[in-house]
Each structure stands twice: as structure tokens, then as C-alpha cells.
Length: 490
Image (cartoon, rainbow, N blue to C red; front, side):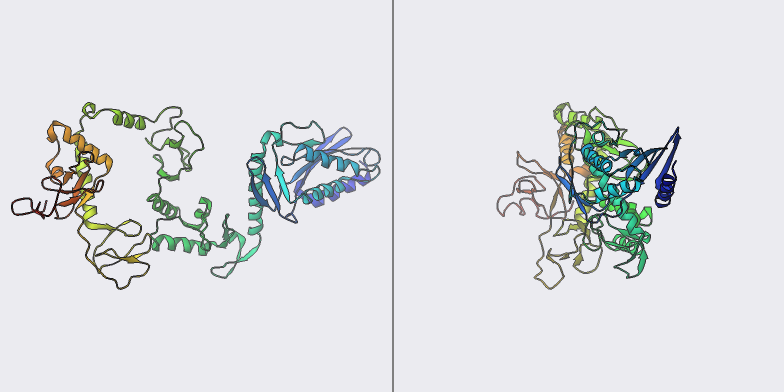
């Protein structure tokens, strides 16, 4: 190795440090690799994925590896043999770069650092739009090595975005920031910057923000950025909730108003389900727990069963397609469950009212008629249902007492089945005395009596009928001393 080349190697080692990888000597040649990193680009580039038309801005690009083999005659006679390793540049782009590197070689002069500067200049001078296109074939040239075709442009697009995100986070953590909430100067490692909106604050303030949100707010909506209400990633929520139990409590609250969250039957962690893009099979039932990695069916809660219909769904379809007279009779335990469900509905309807704005049921356990819904924050009157942003004087008129509650479809269908079995002899008396069917033949919706009023209004077809006799009410003379009583207790 010549003295000029030895000096060049020492300089490269001092500049690159750990990014200088010595591979070793083989005969009269010496091989090493340089990891050429790029600081923040002078100007952000627009990364475009041509096939999907997706685009984003990047401030960083991954390093390029330059593998170099020099011989004893370098630099007097032979140019170093090199190979450029890069997966996000196409073969055509790398070939153009390699030709530029060959063009600047002159015998008798060390060239490696010039090549490094040429590569950096090439990357920094990329046009404002960096377009990733689909490539069909690769070029066989020993000077370049790229997996662009194998990885495919869509995956490269995702990798570049992730690399840029990581680099931005590293820079953020290495600098000092003034927290916009407490106004204290904090290290980036003690702060959290939200991925979507780029707002940040110190972890201490965000912990307090999350805990206050959980303890004081009963809103059934997701926790968002304190400044712009942008949604947050799960990793960000984990840092905001210092205790896993608090995060679990937050997820349980979301469960109350979303059908996309289920519980793992093995470890009992909550899981947010992401709908599959598949258009066939039972893909919508597939769930994977991120805590214990258990895969199961969200319908039957059993181990995942690909390629077959869910047994629970199959049983339900068979039941729905079977005529009523051929369906097996309900077991006593099922009748007890129906009775308990009816009692629960009656208790809920009797002791609570729906918020006139959002419909969330609210129980009044004392005090005046001024109510405040914790879900939508409106104020309303318990007596008449008036509501507004602030509670104020209003003409309060007593609303008519609600006399009935329509039973859910499946529960109504079960009671209909019981009624058809042995002329209803299997229906317990505590169920019989609480319910009444709409007299219209094309309706027959089953209603549960609430309060003392015997005038029921079908919530399905709006027919007025009598709870006592089950007949439709026409005019004002149905209730009299010779007919049914207008008010009675169960």
C-alpha cells in the first residue's frame, strides 16, 4: 500500500469512525466499506409513490454504503474497484452516479474522498420531487447493487417515511425545548412530540393532562392533542398515561362507544380491531392480541379458525332460517335470562332518562331539576327536557309520562316464540304481567309497561293501544267505569 493511500485511509477512519468497516486484505488488495450518511437535506423533498399517488415530505434519506477494493498499484495506476449499495435509488439512477464517479478518476491522485463528496452532492441535488416508480428488471453491473425491484416501490416508500420519522425524533431528543404548557426548558428526551400535528410538551404536563382528562371528563371520545385535537397513536398514549392501569381504564371508556374494540379471552387486554381490506371469507372476525399474540375469532372468542365459517355465526343463521314450529324449545335458564333482561329494562326506563342532546341515559339521584350531561356537556331540565349550552330560566312544562318501552328485536322474537309454545303456558307470570303486544297484525311489537298509565303508544307503528286489554284505542271513551282503567299498577 502506497504512502498516499495509507494517509487516505487514516483520514477516512478519523472522519467516519464507526462508519468505516474494514473487511480485510486478500492478496494484494484491501477491501473496506464506508457508510455515507446525509445530514438534514438542505431543502425538504416531496416523496411521491407514483402507483398510489401518495406523497409526503422528507428531511432525511438513509445512508448509502460504498464498498471499495484497492490494489497495491493505487493511486499510481489502477482506480479502486467500487460497488454502490442503495435500495431506494433505481438501477438507472445508480448507474448515472457510477458514470459520474468514473469520469472524475485521474491516475496518480487519491480519489475516494472525492467520490464521497460526489455522492453527497448527488443526493443533496435531487429534485424537489423524488418519485418512486415501479421497476420491472434490474441492470447487471458490478459497480451497483440495489434491491429496488425486489423490495418494490410501495415498501420503499414506507421505509423512507419511517427512517425520516426516526431521524426527526433523534434530533428532537438531542435538543432543548420550552414546554408550551409549563414554560420550562426541558430536554427533548423528557418531552413528547405528537406524530401527526408535531405539537409537543413535556411528559410531566402531558401526564397531568391525561390524568385530568380521565378523572374529570366523562366524554366518550378519544384523547386528542391538547392544542389542535389531532388524534394520537397508541405509543403516544402509553407515554401520556404513566400507569398501564390508567391506559386500560381509558381504553375501557372507549369501549363503551365503539364496536371496533374487543377483549382478549386469554390475557383480557383490550384490542382495537382494524378492518381487513379483504373482500371474502371471515376476515372481519380475525383479531390478534398485541399483548400475548393470541389470535382468535371476535364472534365466538375461540382460537382463530381460517377458511371456515364461524360456528357461532353458522348456528345463528341456522336458527334464523328454521321455521318457528321446528325450533327447539327454550330452556328454563333462557326463560330466566329473558325475565331478568325485562326487569333490567324496566328499572333503567323507570330510574333514568336519555339526554335530550346525545341520548346517553342519565340517572337522577337527588337535588334539583338542573342536570348536566357529562357526555356532551349540555345542561337540561329533568322535568321538561329543555336543554342548552348553559342552564337558564325557561318555560317548564311537565312532559307526559312515558308509559312503555319497546323491547329489542331479538328479545321480542324470543317472547313471541314462548307465546307460540303451548299457548304461552311456558311464559312465567312475572313476564306476562309486564308486557303487551301491539294489536296491529303487521307489527306485533312487544312493549314493556313503565309507570301507571295504561295508554301505550307503539314505538314501531305509533298505534295507541290499551295495556290491560291489548286493543287499539279509538276516541276518549275506552277508559271509563264500564271499561278499562286509565291508570293501574302492575
